[in-house]
Length: 94
Image 1: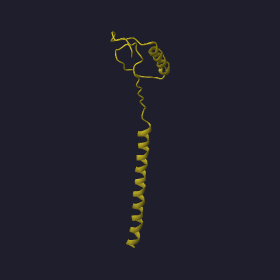
Image 2: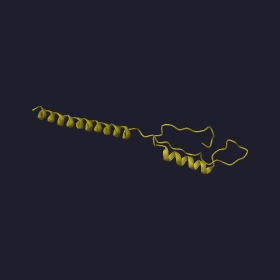
Image 3: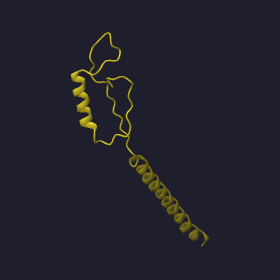
Image 4: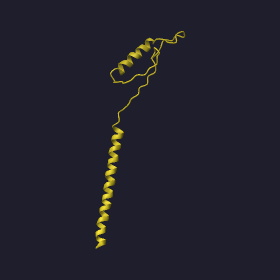
């Protein structure tokens, strides 16, 4: 009779071990999903300076008419986009 009672316990242990493994695996999958897809998105936009007036005697030139048009278009495109920070050089053409 001891052989018959040890088999159900062995089967119970196997089911218990597999149940625990599936529970842990499920928890890992859920945590991996949230860690991957619930992060905030950061978007970085790089823009080269607008066109400047070409003047070899002026190291700090203003924007050309084309550069001014480009700057206005960029302001229109990104004006209401929710940009949090802008980094620029000290030059007028930026």
